Image (cartoon, rainbow over all chains, first blue to last red; front, side, top):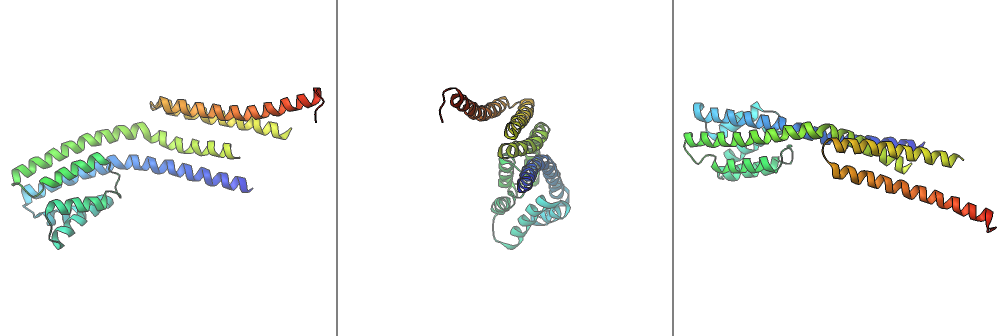
Length: 171
Length: 68
């Protein structure tokens, strides 16, 4: 009896791990798309709305959903409350939030490089930098989509089958 | 007798699961991992079978060579 309960626990744990990994894989392209549209609306705010940066990022935080909205919220808070440069505020809020998102090193590097240019140029070159970041993000998104299609089912069945194997070996 | 039937089922189970793992890893192009998984499954079963065959030899020895 105890054996069966233990086997069920092992199966649940490994299957859950597999599904969690698959969720991480499917979350990444979604968040990348969101980030892309966030940058696009940031561009619109800057180009046509002439909105100050903290105001624009506060609006973005209100528009977006969970993990990304935290990032823009932290950024806007840092800009309004503390005496920092835009780059430092951007980097710090990136460091705070990136563990909670599904982003990998590539996107983080793109965002860091984008943060260095933020708020240092006139509107035209700012727009160009935003476009550049969006192009880079599109490339990462295609990569993330490829990975999702390739590995999502594998990870799920791998979790289940490894649990089954473990149970058979231990029984 | 019950023990042997148990072990046969165990070997069959390991075989099926390892075969599934092999095909799935093969499909996504991780050929080297697939081969490692198959190899380890094979080695595990080989050890199990070796210990059973060892028991058999001891029994044969004790029957034909009159040893305790």
